Image 1 (spheres, rainbow, N blue to C red):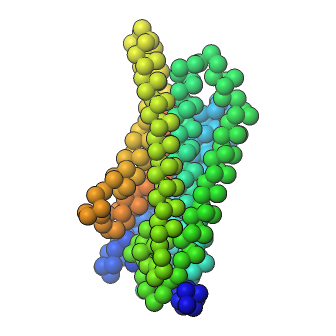
Image 2: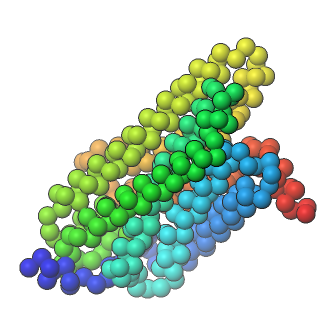
Image 3: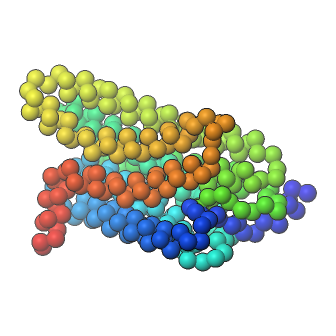
Length: 307
């Protein structure tokens, strides 16, 4: 019976950011600008950190991969979202929905751990500067990034398979602007205990491990900065991690706001607004955060534009 019910749903309908017809065109242009800035900003970071000789340190290596992840995350979501603003029927096929969920999970999990890796990089740079190039060697950089991508792919496969192994009956309207785990699980007409458990364990483990690494790294960074005697030295040391601290605060703040809502007040509409922020707005902001306060990136950009 489950298999019969499962075969009935061949496509899903996405409600989108807003169901008000008058807002579709204005929202299309708003998110088109956001996506355009995201693509331009992240491609600029990827290009500059690849071609400029001054940006070949571990910090910029990790920044390049954060830009790749941000660009990938937005590209999985934004094009389909923009098309849906212009058409009346917001449908997505069963397999297209599965592919979008898998892609989203790959990039969001990769971003969570990439930010943790970047925090560890700043910890070594400030707390053990003499050993920095030995500890965070080229081989270690490739290993950390490879493990991040491997783990994110593994997580995406496991969670996606759990979600799409459920039976979906007559209801196929997803109250979201992309295929996400929570609204998909709420549509199922079969037992959802296993997928809910897998999603909860995965999300909580990933978030807590990453936050622990970030908090521990910055706790030691602050202690090291406070031990620096000169105010100029403290300012210089602190300036090397302010961009990352800003990006981490915005990203984790959004995720914690969404996941720590009381269950009785939990709203999918609030989830949608938070999702807009961490899937589309943050990938647009990160290149600005890392370039506007970074002299090396600004100098590399000027050099690139004048050549």
